[in-house]
Length: 313
Image (tube, rainbow, N blue to C red; front, side):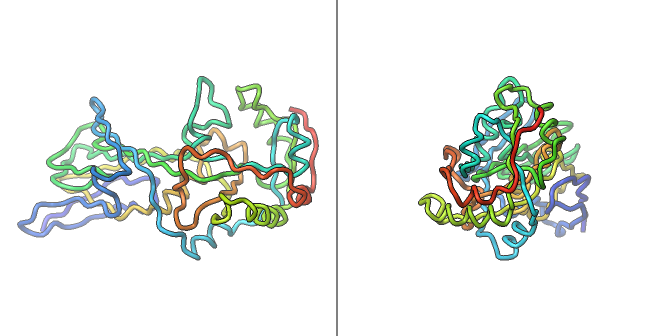
């Protein structure tokens, strides 16, 4: 029995380093359970010069379990805060509330990187680099690979997308420093902020559930929420040695959580807390062309406001 070693796994839950064996007389086969092959309708292949194959995938996640829902609603801040331009003061104080989408937040980076257009929103990247090794046969991130190896370049790079309705807030009561730092990191003048609203979180959730129940598009969806974590969600390179490549099953659920609730480090000053409106049966599968979901002025949402005011920006 010959053993192959998986080296240097980093950053993605579901991937582990370790060893495995190939049966005597059988060609070693790298398996990637749970990922579709190159003919899948949710994968589009583009060949890059010198960089193997690039794949775009759209996550298809099973129905959220009760345990997963409990994890996604476990955090209960007493208060959450929304920073915005005072141009919208009157409507927001009257209970206006808008859910944008992850796809729109990440769609247009433009010349300047705005806090409202992070081009990593709604996606993550996984790269596979054999590191001088050789894959005889296997399904690698949705691509069928036969007799392939590379040196110094990625064999396959997959950009994974998910989309849901999302509202971005800051955790806790108003903090003057957070508002100042938001503006210090903002290059687009029209996106700068000078007003805040702080909500009682429990009352806000109750109000949202009541109001969303009146909107046809939202009736079948549920609210989930979490603090945002910060880090490089795209530095996911893996290597193998000898002729073998072995990975344990990728958790699509954990990838979705990472896409929805992790941002790159440059946004950590926002201390962000997110509320997502999702389809429990198809989380992450909102049409990428979907527009915002808007609750017009609502006395219920307005009643959840416990503090508001201008701040020096």
